[in-house]
Image (cartoon, rainbow, N blue to C red; front, top):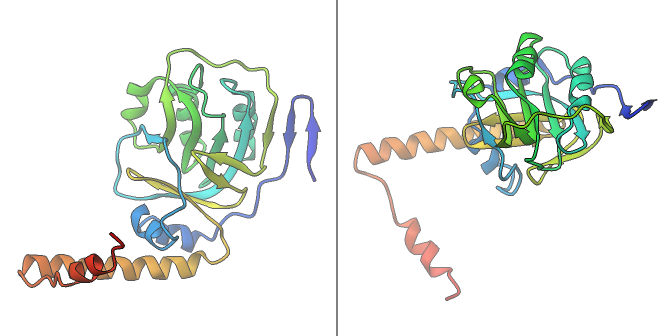
Length: 225
């Protein structure tokens, strides 16, 4: 049940995704998942600010909506996060004040979060770039946050044009971010693995100078003009 506490509306966190599912997603690039989600889902305008790693970020979404440039909701939302979760914050895309910086992103990593996604601004970018803890944001400013609220925790939000529900699995790499409903994710993993296998075959064909390019003729033939 939703809890009203002064300036924040708080709901319990959703059931975490299965660890085996998350382990599988760690090994799949976001592009392969996106190709099997109709190529029309995902964020626009959010950038990774951390040091690139070998694994895809994957974790259960704890969501928050905050007033632009205010991080009171973020501070409280950390208490709703479990190890392996991704905290996703709808800050309205505002870049006037940073919601998170080096200290609070360090704390998120310290308590075991899988990553942070903020549709708003961050600061202390040099510090964040020196770590491999995933941090995605819309932009950067040196101006710090306010701490007045209001806000909401574990509600449906939108970040970078992508709807995120509490309990969605959020994946991210250097190409961007996706929110995947837990229902049906195993079938998506199978399709993405098939995509990767097909891409590997194409690469081998290119290396051996036997890549069949006849599909280009078919693509040209279907053009309307």
